[in-house]
Image 1 (cartoon, rainbow, N blue to C red):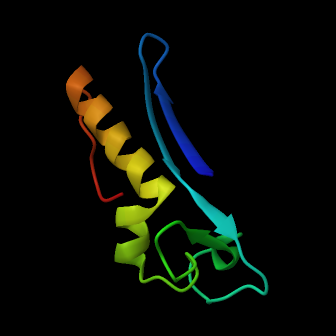
Image 2: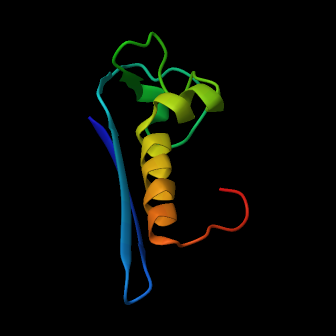
Length: 86
């Protein structure tokens, strides 16, 4: 399982977002995209590793994208506004 957690705190408030994706490791590594272990992680239900996926596909299926969307929702629900691009 690939997991990602995000945390924001300003001393008074703490906001988190978490995401996970089930999958397995593959060897040899496949793909030049992403970073770290992306070329060796293949999400369940996919024939591609994160390293082979276009960024949009990885964002929609991946643990980091899921965590970011949960984090954005949690920030919005507390009234904290984001500025700029992610």
